[in-house]
Length: 178
Image (cartoon, rainbow, N blue to C red; front, side):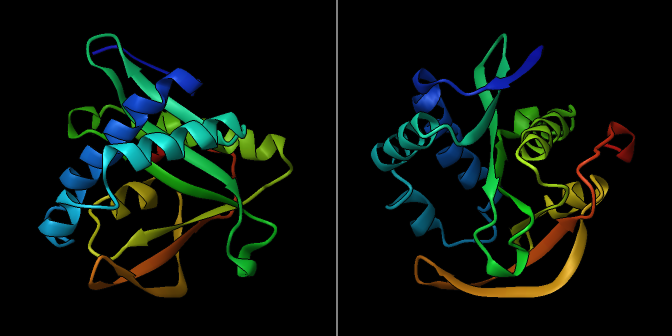
């Protein structure tokens, strides 16, 4: 499978929404309530609207496009939403279909986001990761370190915890592993 990483275009919003919804179902099937994953707010209409809005506002959004399957992953980044990290950039999300895992696609998406964040004057970044999310190991391999911050949140009717991971540098190299 040949993958190209590129900036998202408005016409990508539907495929991004599809990846968003279905990669959540793949990634969180053993972590979040199945009824929540199958019902609102993870419905196509609101996700499609969200991604059209974010792309049209020039948010940092990159897609991983396969020559065979179309868009198989995406990443979104921007300014820190958490006041504790005002000088940092934030990785809002990276989602991939499982068929795109272990191919270096996530690293390529992350590297693209880091370059945009650097261009906007950031030299560090952070993200929040759901407890028990197996992608925590991906972030660790990319150089992120677990911080001492935990968010208590509710997704659907379920209480969840999110851990903060941060990168001290946006000078990303792929030698950090796959």
